[in-house]
Image (cartoon, rainbow, N blue to C red):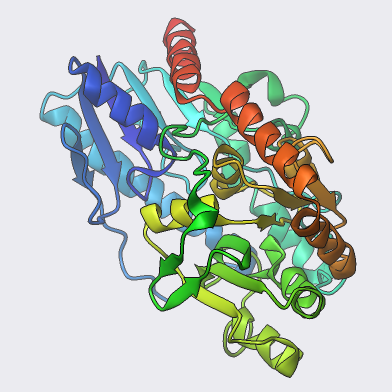
Amino acid sequence: MNYLFIHQNFPAQFLHLIRHLVAEGTHGIVFISEPNDNAIAGVRKVAYRMPERPQSNAHRDAQEFEQAVLRAEIVARTAANLKQLGFTPDIIIGHHGWGELLNIRDVWPDAPLLGYYEFFYGLDGLDVGFDPEFPTDPGQYARIRAKNTVNLLALNNGGHGQTPTLFQHGTYPAWARPGITVLPEGVNLDKCRPDPAAAAREFVLGDIRVEPGEKLVTYVARDLEPYRGFHIFMRALPRLLRARPDLRVVLVGGDGVSYGARLANGSWRQYMLAQLGDAIDLARVHFAGRVDYEDYVRLLQRSDAHVYLTYPFVASWSMREALACGCAVVGSDTAPVREFIADRQTGLLAPFLEPDSLADRVLEVLEDTALSRRLRQAARGWAEANLDMGAYIAAYQALIDTAIGG
């Protein structure tokens, strides 16, 4: 078969499927994307370039859509060049989020389309207005509604949809859900696995060292920001550090902003360190930045308690990988996390907005060896039952067959 993938950041959510298709060795695989250095042998990357963004004359609430329309135009032009060169896809698989798929059926009207639906924005019950520390100005409501313009056009563009969680599926309007299949994403359970010996040896990551007798609390996010509860975690640290002189904390994540608002000056890390001052012992709290994947997995394997927090928003892969590594996870009691963690069964849950409650749960894991052991075993068992990569690929192939048949 000829597969055409489209996403601005190759290989994105399609990495595991593409690796499987390449291993089968019988497919033509083309990926349209913006340029980057990533490469997979057996995949033909076709790059498109967005122009430098000039000052827009469009209304502020329409500027994001303006970019999506421009992206759709450039991607369709790139696809038309492929068609002229003789390429015809048996299926097109892509992400609807940035408008790349909006015009693709103008190029191949009869090609089956399987689009990734990530999140439908709302003004109530989701990320907007969730955190009272950062209230949403009602003047921003129109802009938030406008963020769904691409979503709505995509839902009216035919083809079939997929999304990885029930939570994300539920953000879409009821009339749209029958056309979107929930396809839970898998984890490489061979790479992300427990290492029972990790706690008995020194852990080294750059200039960070954790001795065998020390307790290690970990936190991972693409960027250290409020959407992932960074501010809540930081406020829980003074109590944890006082209670456990043997404690070290390692935070993985960049200083950018993936979701939500940027500060006028500096990063959220700088903001929280300035706010907490001497209450944070930087000899025991380590900011690792972004790390290599192998080091990240080693960190999870060594962790004594792993904290994962998120607004009611898209869940991170790191939570899945932490469960697969057999971490004792303390998560936020928010809908995306509850889909993965049953409180006191596969992890512990704490109210997102309560740093003291979060500290209590972490200390419970650190001090109750039997509880920690039980949670770790249950986390790995849940991952084996629900995150198996082979089952994920088989379900993906069945969905592709459905999209082609439909």
